[in-house]
Length: 57
Image (cartoon, rainbow, N blue to C red):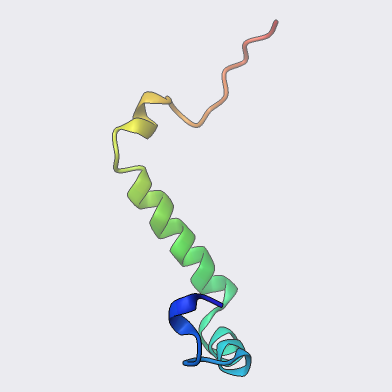
């Protein structure tokens, strides 16, 4: 456990928080938010579109 949390939370409390507040839907929504925020920067636009080019060797 993180040093700043020693003595404030035990394993059962962390498990309870996990069961009550973390769902796959919430994780998916958070992932979408992170990706959408990242795509606002200019760097991803330099990489081009998502489509893969059909270049062959």
